[in-house]
Length: 255
Image 1 (spheres, rainbow, N blue to C red):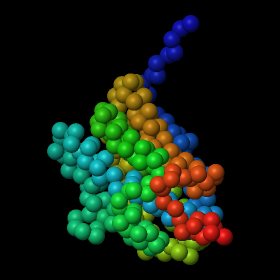
Image 2: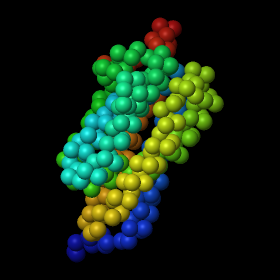
Image 3: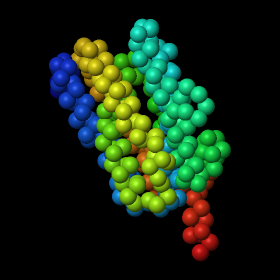
Image 4: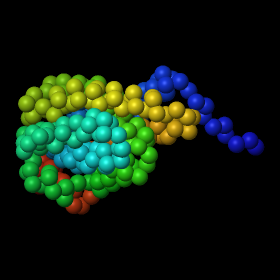
């Protein structure tokens, strides 16, 4: 039996089309948990659990980007990439994407120290996020940059999220969702740069296959976080004993 044929080198335009197809199939916008979130089918406690667990991902984005930045020899490339860290950390206390996410968790009635400490996270959340940091640290720079290409698909899910949450949940406001409004401009800028980099530097069939695999991996990181949330807080509703317990779950148990 002959060995499976290796993938052939494709044009940069074909590579882009294949990457976009991966996102269309595997991006977490297709996860059932997001369908419930955007359609107003979750209760307040389930939305709180989502925001609390998602903070671990938000918190680690600058750590991920710092790991990538440390591997860049070209100062021009570093100057471009470091904007991502500024976007999330801000230039001063209370600025940036992390602060805006904490504003959302505040608005949802979550204790800020509980959110920031990470002690109430689901194990699946923690493992997925830290697997991503390890990936960008240990794989090639090309693969690390390619893994960020999920940002190509972010504007659509952000628009759906903001519209759906404002329509269905009286406990959120446009102000509390400010994180997403900023990402509508930041994500396209970042993904345009990363896509151009990948198309120029994935110049062999082997590198192109690594790029495809990197994007599939990143999609799995995002998807697995929602798997953990769905299992713990929707169906079957079995959470890690040390994980966040919504106040409405306590009320239901008492009743």
